[in-house]
Image (tube, rainbow, N blue to C red; front, side, top):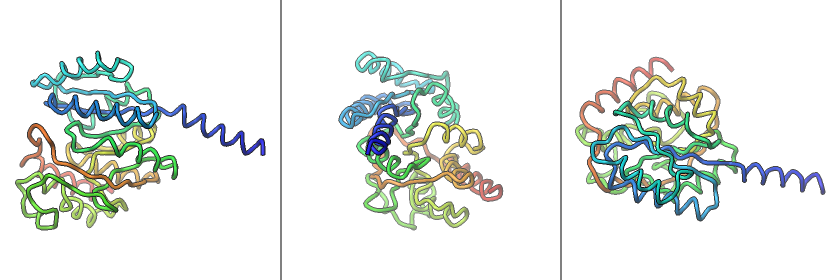
Length: 265
């Protein structure tokens, strides 16, 4: 009995020692940042998990960094950590930059544009603890997951709307990727995930893709390295404020990157 009690106590102590570092790369998100930060503080506060929010602003001309500085004064520099960069350098390098400053043993990546609701984070953490997963990915395509706020229907016809963000962010891109790479995960293009810090560090070191393909390569490399992946159904909502940053160049980059990934895995 005492051994069992000791085991339970040890597990509880480890869980209490866990800390979650949220990486928020931003570019022109001054309208969205206050609300996403408030929601993160709310759900972490209610769940009782230790956390920090690392804002990685890439020289936003709209004053996003100034808004982040005000938020830091409100919530404290132990919860809002500012690690800005002088210019836009890409998502992969933003994660590398953020990881260097993260003090948590778990890393959460998500968009700052309110596409990803922080209410799902406690579910990510619960899923990870239940299965001991190396990473947990939000999925729009299993269970009660879904996509809301797009003008076009979410089906394979969106493959033909190549000038719309739907092409890149929908089942279309996932369908093509599933056919070519067969990674064993349902949502490859999403960017709402929970990683063990050391796992994310190794994956980022191995990934060579940039832009939109980066998220897909992370999952593919994780499978190659034998990491375990859990999934949590999420609701994805199209951005509330601001314009989508996806365009024709991103579509071309996606196709090129996908073919490169197919040829090298």
